[in-house]
Amino acid sequence: MALSRHFRTSLAHFNANVDRPDELPEYLESLTELNRQELKNEFKNALDKDLLTEREFYDATACDPASKDSARAFFESVYRYAFEGGEETDLTDYWKTPPNWRSYD
Image (cartoon, rainbow, N blue to C red):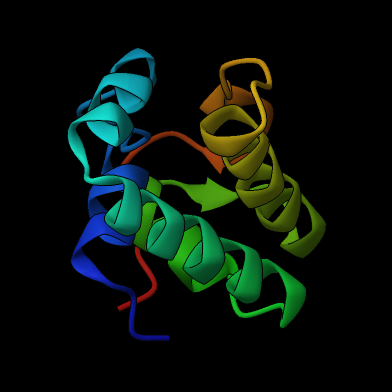
């Protein structure tokens, strides 16, 4: 799935090698209202169409997901955190292996 630059940057806050999810709200605030709304729509559409897979989980986090359902739950949690005032997403709740254990390459 081709993700926009803002989508990729948002998810990069959860990369286990960077681990800065607390900075996501600040990043979102730095976007224009239009860009924020476009990002929200893109994210919601990707969730609704089930386009965010284990591969996207690995690409975003550098970790293997515990399962397909776990990857899905991670993206849903990130969406709630980013756009609905949900709790900060803890990557360790969703991974099977720590960063760079193996890759999908």
